[in-house]
Length: 112
Picture 1 (cartoon, rainbow, N blue to C red):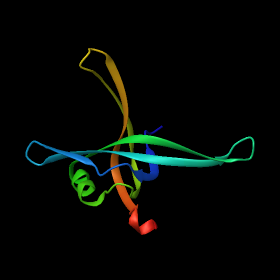
Picture 2: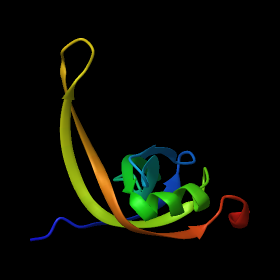
Picture 3: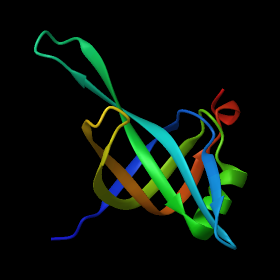
């Protein structure tokens, strides 16, 4: 089995990009995916899930240039779990998607 994720969704914001080392960059951004289905009463229901994306290196540079709030994007990557201690000493757990590739599908403006 492989740890592989593919999602199509809309960006919640432009990516937050940080530089490190000589040429390193990391971008973080949230993506919303929405599933639409009929419930047991026959009513249409929309359910939105937010995912945290982490993009490294050259792809982070591309994300900084291309990704804008509301744009539709296809991403491919893998799920990464990590933990840390917050300022109060409480252990926190985070699941993120480490993006290997992304394709911009539409900007918010082009869909109207």
